[in-house]
Length: 476
Image (cartoon, helix red, strand yellow):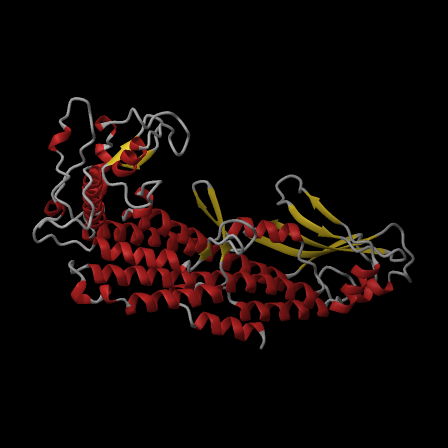
């Protein structure tokens, strides 16, 4: 299938706001045909220009104009050893306004017979007289070629402006969604404030022993629903792989496959049924999140399709007209009209090694949205790997749960398991990290309650063993 049909089919699958801003590939193809016709009318058929470039000595030169003239971006000079004239293809102006033209120059005092091909070639061109007097230099503007580059650069500039708007709108929606989710996923515990520990405060006012105090009566929060939802998204690795073997950005096909699997898991999960949602706007926020991820996939398709269309149309221009599209000019167009500045990043339409806009949006989801809900793994004890409820922070800075610390102290182990600093045996109640205790109690009430119950059972068992009472002891 021809690329133009494939390109059109891809665009039909995209939202109108993207589809309407795509590069007009077919229109550019028509302009290439007009360029070929214009050159042929001057006698410069693709075969003639191809022979000149193949047989001649082609040189690429960067030439700066003088006075008020625009700089000449590029000159391609095919010079035949036995030719009395020189033909140059120039692209004058800047990226926003390119003016392709041919410059024909007579070399020295040539025999009129040898200039006959040039006379025939230039016959009919305005400014050439009929008395076979050839000017030393003649510039021939290429109107169709100018129209081609003008359409292409204008399309890319318009697309760049649109992508700036897409980026701003996406970030605005993402920020609003994060604010909404933070309201629907509030902490469930009875602790309403953040209580950092200080030497003058009374740590005893922090209630940590009552299991019933972990929940407010009638509390409405979808904290655990959103935590599981985000965990499903992270595990899906829709757009990027974190595996060592294939780390990096996923292909469009793989991303689409994984996004469908993620959505299926969300819809199949019982906890996301409307009856299980405690906050009425949570379902709306879930739909918004799914819409954002689907849009990123559409943008990824759009990004790739337009980059490929630009690459192919420039290649087709070079092949059909035999006029080279210089690498330097292509790079300049990419930098000038395909860029989107975001502080320290340069985001381009073209896959040239810079960060693409779809990838930037994926990163924004991970940086703006996912951190709203703390993950239990980030607050786990380094020894037992369960949540560090009633955490003890040693002088060396490393943190463990109180039960693991007590066990180390009973064994007489003074070395910190992480850095080997002798800080374990000197740790006491003053090493409790009260701020973190309140934090995990607020954000992980279920895990904290389970850890508290587990700690109490384990402590009771140890006390019984110290008294010589076995677990199976029966009192008659």
